[in-house]
Image 1 (cartoon, one colour):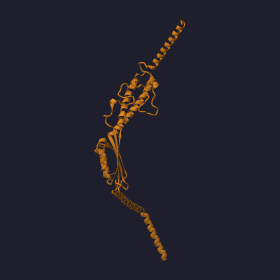
Image 2 (cartoon, one colour):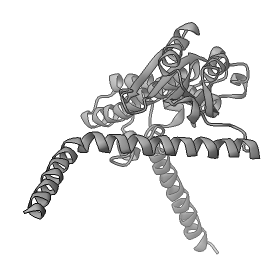
Image 3 (cartoon, rainbow, N blue to C red):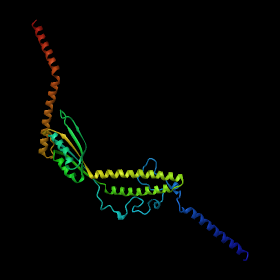
Image 4 (cartoon, rainbow, N blue to C red):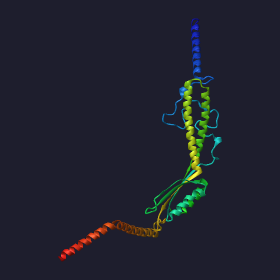
Length: 311
């Protein structure tokens, strides 16, 4: 028994020393120390080449180091205290109207005056055809303040025979304020990465952080552009009007009852007859000289035939 006691004591001492060494090694590997650590260069993986993601799931830096204590979570969403329910809605309105008119010039001028009357402007327009033998078509895209969109659309519809009228609305509110919160998150990250660049010592760490900063600033510009576009589209609705020149007989009827169908058939018959006569007159006008020469030749041939017959 006396010989086993020293052996047993040595085994216990060896186990304690091994545990202490393992604990010290784990402590050195798990802590980053009080100063700047070069961990980002090991953990950081930029977004795949060619894909400019607006937000990254695998951050090089820890969320606490980048974001600190903010009102935004790491995913870019707003906290419950910052609900967008009391913020202005971002509704994008679009409308289109197709008109016919037998008073083309007057109707076109009236359409041009609509945007200014409601505080808007003409975004683009074009006129097709000359009105000399061909029918003219005028198309105009107006930007109208959202609060006057319905009034402007009704005013356009009152200027001619309405062939079609459409309207659509897109609610971009949630998308807009989600982008706003992500933008603020990115701006916070930009500030913190700049601070870390100032504090960095190793050149390799500085290069990694500057690369990350480039991605962040690209995403900031992307969100700013998209938000500006939504602001523009929601503040000024888009109204497109297409005006076609027609005669009174060609004015389309909205109703499809028997009477209107008979009227349409009669009008088509008249138009076809008029078109046929026009084509005949055009043909005769173009063939008058050849016909005249043929008549002369026919007359000369008939006279010659008579002379030969008498002789």
